[in-house]
Amino acid sequence: MRLPGCLFALLVLPAWVAWAAPAIPLQTLIDATPAGGTLRLAPGTYAGPASIARPLALDGGHRAVIRGDGRSTVLSVAANGVTLRGLHITGSGDSHDRIDAGILLEGDGHRVEDNEIDDVLFGIHLKRVNRARVVGNRVTGKNLEQGMRGDAIRLWYSQHNVIEGNRFRRARDLTFTNSADNRIVGNRFEDGRYGMHIIFSPRLQVENNHLADTGTGIVVLYSPDLVLRGNHVAHALTDGGGGIVFKESGVALVENNEVLHCSVGLKVDAPPQSVGALKVSNNRFAHNIIGLFFYGEEGGHRFFDNRFENNLSTVAISAPGAGSANVWRGNTWDDYQGFDRNGDGIGDTPHEVYLFADRIWMETPMATFFRNSPVLEMLDFLERLAPFSSPHRVLRDPAPRMR
Image 1 (tube, one colour):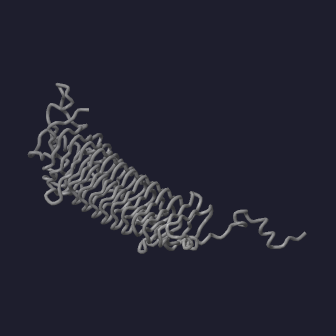
Image 2: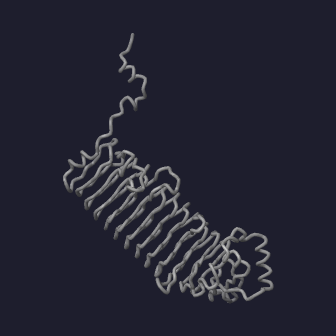
Image 3: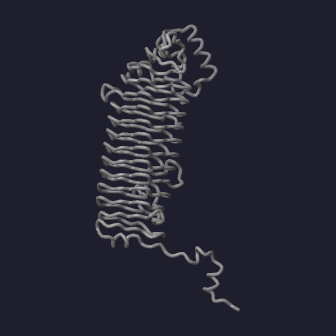
């Protein structure tokens, strides 16, 4: 018996091919939803790109997929008071010029909650957005070389927003530009260039975030009055970066952070004469190549009750005088060589750090390759044994804590 051609095709093709329905145009459903209404999507795949121009709620129930066309932003919002919840958004374009994203937000008072966003160049882009909540989303960027990726989240001229409990992976940066007074709390980011890139964005609260396997953990540029509290930064090893980096950004509180296995634990280039001093307290800097690095300024920053453990070099400076005005007290130093005879937990003698032969690699960048080599170790030993000139003192902690 000879089967008709169409029936034969249904029999031999996989079931998902034979019965696949075309994606439903999402824009039609959005346009039919009244202002203030809720559009609950049935399980299935919906075709983007789509845009929302009135306040409404779009709920995917964790079973609706919005698939972009691979040439633009998947879902754009140009209204106030829009809620996006339980959606799977995928397939943006790859243009940096257009800033192709999974979600583009404009307007105020949005809620973006519990969405899955993947295969996108930029994840969530807030453009002049105020008083929004971006909570509990999972964003994975396109599988591109690091320099070709977009930002997992990008705030531009956006204020009083809450970015909380999101999971970001395989992106370029988390970027905050000209965006003051935002709270960034409890987020995770892995596999990127800058964990957080903060530019001209004062008064941010950056708390309890987990950043790992990025070139630089948190870099702060021209953004005073920040609070960095309780963050965990690990494996930021790109040359020239560090776990936490300040450039011309002062009057900041850096406390209760843990910075592990980075090229530099904390790098400071922030003259307090012009921008104000940092307060750095109760942090742990451990297993870094350099614990602290001061570049080209006298300092005046305050370092209280921090722990420095198993760093290859505890403190480095760009030249004699850098960091010389910093204030130190009550820090724990693993290379402290004093005693605590009265048992009060404070060393009997101050902890002092001097530059000997290590000045060679600190002041001559090309010599960094030989840092901790046997030759420099021998030179350093001889310098300490019989200095050719008076060594330069980098810091003095009058009350070091014992372990």
